[in-house]
Image (cartoon, rainbow, N blue to C red):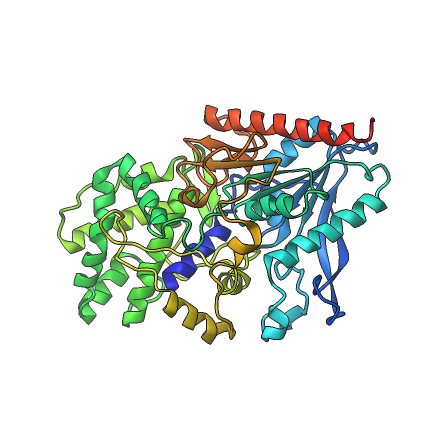
Amino acid sequence: MEVTRLLHITLLITLLLYFCQAYNYETYFYKQKVDHFSFADPDTFNLRYLINDDFWDGNGGPIFFYAGNEGDITLFADNTGFMWDIAPEFNALVIFAEHRYYGVSLPYGNDSFTKLKYTGYLTSEQALADYVELITYLKSAIDGAKNSTVVAFGGSYGGMLAAWFRMKYPHVVQGAIASSAPILQFTDITPCEDFGKLVTADFSKESPECANVIRNSWAAIDSVTRNEAGLAWLTQAWSLCKPLKTPQDITSLKNYLVNVWTNLAMVDYPYPANFLAPLPAYPIKVVCSHLTEANNDPKPLLEEVFQGLTVYFNYTGDSKCLDINQQADSRLDDYGWDFQACTEMVMPFCYNGVEDFFEPAPWDFKSFAQTCYQTWGVYPRPFMAVHMYGGKDISAASNIVFTNGLLDPWSTGGVLWNVSETVVSLIIPEGAHHLDLRGSNPDDPPSVIQARMIEKTHIQNWIDEYSARYDE
């Protein structure tokens, strides 16, 4: 369960992007229904959204709409450079909408996660209905927007929402750019072991010895921490902020390492990134430069591993100790996502320790479901998202561009084939997690530059198609 939660959290923490860029926008709130699908609950709440009209021509230019995912919406607005880069070219109105139960858009304030009767309205379908209401209102309230083409954008879970938005509400949104959107990362669609295999492949491509160091590190940790002297040694050798004392501490340490290796695969960008702390370009390459002797005895091997870890948590040398409980940006909320993962966003993960370099960890749905019930008072519905949105059977959809970087382990749950002429897949071989949504960079690989050009072509086609309806 803990490993699964950590991987769910990676949908959040990889949204910390290259050189955080501040953009100009105004903040507004829209009164939303708590429940869009019945008449039994009249409660409302204020949904935050951000808007920029610097490039808006005020005469039917398109609306670029970011479908906010599981975090503070300002994080996405400040770091989705592709939308800002192309907005002047399209004379677009730029809007970022916050997902309910995240950021400040809490339907019941501080009580939003205290009782199931409050938390139960946290679902993807309620969030999409929020976006429908908001867009409908804005198109009527903003002069010149009535006939504007709406293009949805999103990365990771936001990419899933952007794609589903177009599928469920094609009369509201005319096209979607769905980047690194693992809409197939569900039970009976994507094998649970694929994610870990790709993480391992990213390190193995850099150096097979590097991957083997990580593979051997789990047994080395067990060997060293069998007694108090070993616990004290590892605490000191790894400069841990809190001493290791209990078996649970060792479990937490291992979970932290699973998170580190996974995150490095996801943020293996060709330029420096700021991720919890600054990272170098191609961080896996830098980490693997320290992991070179897989056959070392436990203590020397773990000293190597620590040198690799310093690239992740202390590249600048400013950190005084390694905090294995360190969280990502405070604007990210893994608490809400834990509820979603326990209800409709059930994404199985497992490891076998052979085809991947993790400790064996089978997917145990019964145990997962019981923990969810103990935590939230709900049992997961593993097929709910597939039933609502179609899973692999999305042939009736149109006007969606799915993009996936082959370095990104979430691509294992992505759409990697052209579904039709209008639902297409763009593969970015050198790309990590939603690289194409980031702002342009001189070190971008040719494949992401080409992908963005194709995305712009599709956006223009959607605008032309929709505009033609009003020219007849």
